Length: 368
Image (cartoon, rainbow, N blue to C red):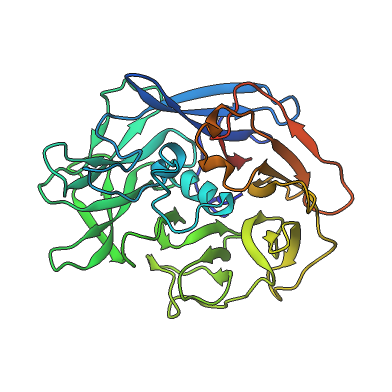
């Protein structure tokens, strides 16, 4: 539940914002088109309640390939990861990837941010967005100046601006934003730690945190995050935009044995995937384990379990069970996925999610 701290925003009523709904995103590839299918699900029956298609423009960066400008974008995580084209980010476990992909969309899942390559050159990229239900060519290009270097495009919570990292005229990396309306003029939002770390936008007015595994606590006062050379997993929120660094990281707590944060299960507890492969509730104030570990796969099963999402009430999580590096193997997209609903405390029962509309590439992004 990465966005429950954004309660100041009034969301439009739709199947994608109602309580008791799970939201997924799946990348669809055809011979002449590509799109993202965002679906709203009933978590009791696992039947879809609604679907929105977000077209991917032909010049959007949804994979990195030889001869084209390499671009960092969570859209590549969702669509373009393969043995020959790894994630643009150093870590691609689902605890890292799911919050990156969630940040592509506004809170209500009406718009999706994209990075667009200049087809005439190999050095230029700029940002834009597409609206759910739009035609393939209805992308809104917010930039377009020659030699722009804009990457990591994500939406603001209200969908009114696209945020990104960019290279300024002096060669330094910065965080910027462009409004979806008006003249789309570049607004500088603060320093960036290069293009290699993604963005998450939250708060009102919006502000950027450049880090991995950013999940806002329900009360909005703390967040989980991970960044190179920064000690800790849980930090106090702050009121400016910028990278998570030793200087900006306040109130740091190290979560013992945590290799991946799945989400918050209360204002002061976090669900982690541990170094032993099980899941564990951890006290976000002390960093110590709270309760017994939750095992999903056995030590000799030959599979791993990675977490994507915690329910709004903090009682359940959704995990993917697959072979090590299974999501990156050739042909993995043709295998049936193994998604499970797992309790966040020991002693409950695990259930399998069954639908032929899900694939190995499906990301679970929100559980209202």
